[in-house]
Length: 339
Image (cartoon, rainbow, N blue to C red; front, side):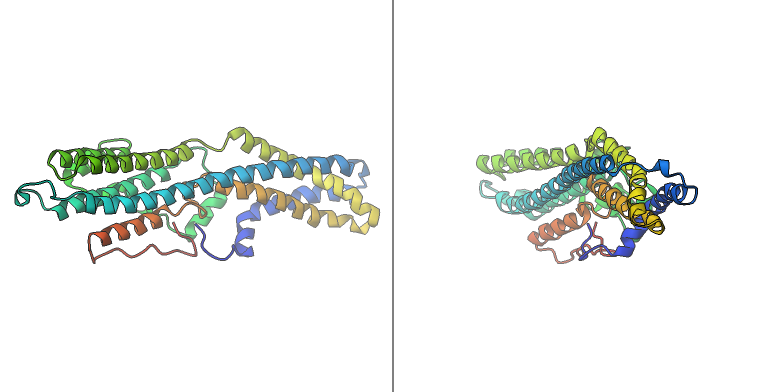
């Protein structure tokens, strides 16, 4: 997530420089044929080109709205995860007690149980964000212009393995069990449910509180499922593909319509077709790329949901509930990008 006031113009131009060069070439060829080789028959009426441009503008606007909805929904989901995680912390601390136990001295200390449940929840957050960072073949981070931007920031899920990161939060038995499964996040909540059941059988949590805690685990499953829905269902390919085709049809036809309009003003002004056609083409194509940048909010792009930063915030909050003092530092942005 970019947290600066704005993207600088030089970064935008760097991001789109290849397209600008192509637009210059596409605009220069018909202009040169018209002005130098007197091939005036190449010019096209402006009206049909303007109609195509209007249709493309509507289509690009639709795409940007749809992809922004995907991004904003993902942010709302992680906002709900933050709230539910804090609720998990207070329920773990305050619901699991010795109130119904006749001889608490014979049982495992409550502090150990509370820590295990909270640490396992941090492991769930970690496993979830690692799963959401796994690439899909329709995502865009393999494109050259996105690979270039990746050098300006770090994606924590790409720097260390999941096994290395979650090991401090799990027992050896839990770690071995979770790593043997495909959907690690799902199995971690399953372990939470199993332990809550055992705690109920041992009298450490009453029936009413047990139901409340299980409802919260169900909510965490719901939020995980919503994330997986966005991750595993791409923005419909027909809209993405047809939008790009229509944009390039408009870009190719644009100089053929502009050249005659500038020729009406003066034969020397014909060459203004090149910069103006390039500018219009750049605007339309860049709007489409803006939508593309929001299609997949978990792919590791600079505009993604800052899952690592949110997870760190949750971890700090939960460990403070355990009265721990040796806490990790809050995540910091790199080049104004927070991941």
